[in-house]
Length: 183
Image 1 (cartoon, rainbow, N blue to C red):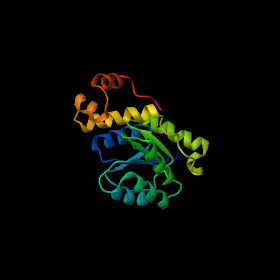
Image 2: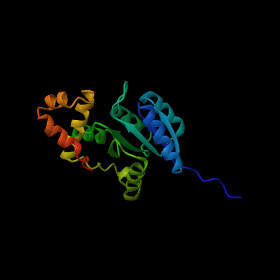
Image 3: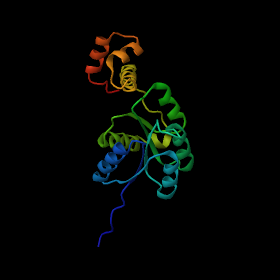
Image 4: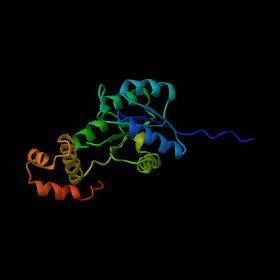
């Protein structure tokens, strides 16, 4: 009789319950043992008891932010692969997350296939163990994400967001209508 396969473990840390649940389900369908935490403190307890192979950490959370959590997870388990997820990426936060121990950085919306592809690349290249820095997002990607964040902060009001960004409303609409830059 064959022994049951040991599934790799992933810990998803995000304050967005819908995103967290959906990502857990998607990773479980891809043969991962997925668990989730809504905040940094809960994540530290779960990481200590479960010893995940992969931790997916949102940067912006109430209480302990993702960068502090990355540092504590790395201190607790140097072999864990840590991928930072955020909807509001920037080069400074990328650098800060890498310096504190993140192995890779993905901008939301990242799906399960993109996350697993990044994990596989890290495992194949040995980057996770070597602590190699992740590729920073392009300036075009950072600009697009910043515009999305300002628009979100303005509750979708294009005119108000354009004023805050210091550009014409039609210019903002044109930039937002394009697909986001991949990197």
